[in-house]
Image 1: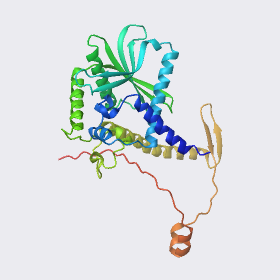
Image 2 (image 1 turned 30 degrees about the vertical axis):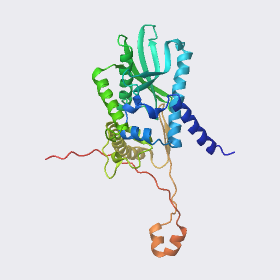
Image 3 (image 1 turned 120 degrees about the vertical axis):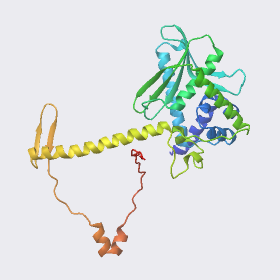
Image 4 (image 1 turned 180 degrees about the horizontal axis):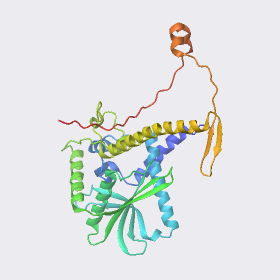
Length: 323
C-alpha cells in the first residue's frame, strides 16, 4: 500500500480546512500579512498558489504545536482563562484583521490581564525572535488596545521545537503606540497595493524559505542578494561556529600527537573520567584513479559511476574596506 499520494492529497485538504477557519484570506489583511513581504501578500491574494507538500507539512507542524499547547493548558486547569483564534477587526477599516492564537483574560493567579500568545513552530529555536514575529504580535496588541482601551495588555511569543522537545517564551511585550502606527500605515499601504494604487515591493526575510513566488522575485535575484537581518545573524553564527571548529581541529591534531607519543601504536587505558584506546590499521591497496585514467582511458570510462551532487554552504566574515 503506497501511502505517499494519499498523504500528499490529505495534507493539502488539511491545509485548506485550517485556512478556512480564518475566513477567506484574499479578502482581508491579517497580522501575518502586515509583518510580511508586500509582493508575497499581493500575489497570494491576487494569484493564490497551493504551497508545496513540504511547506504544507511545516504549516501542519504549527497546527500540531498549537493543539499541543492547548492540551497542556487544559490539563493544567487553566482552560477557563483563555480563548483561541480570537478575531480582531479594525473599527474603521474592516478589512484589517488579526487572529490571536491564545488570548488569556487573566494571569495564572487570576489577576485581570489581556495577554496574547503567538505560537511558532520551528526547526531550531532562534537566539532572538524574528522581526516578523514581533511585528505580527505588535499589530495584534494594537488592535486589542483599540478594542479594550482601558485594559492591561501584554503579549509573548512561544517558540516550540517539536523535534528537539524544546520550548522558549519570548516574553514582556507591551502595546507600543509608535510601532503600531507604523504597522497600521503599512497595512493601509498593502490595501493600496491590492487596489492597484501602489506597487507591492518585495522584502527578503526568513519567510522566503517557503514562499511560492520566490522563483522570479526581484529581492532574490542573483548574483548577490542583500541579506535580511535575521539571516545575517544566522550566517554570522554559522561562520563563528565553523571558525571554532577549525581551531578545534588544529588543537586536536596537536593533542593527538602528544597522546600518541605517550601510548605508542597499540594501547588501552582508562581513568575514572575517560577511556583511551589506540590501535593500528593495516595498510591496504587502492586504485590510483589518475594513473588508470592516463594509462587505460577506455577502462577508466567503463568503470566510472555517478556521484550525487550536494549543496555547499559557505559563511565567511566580510572584510571591511578601509580608505
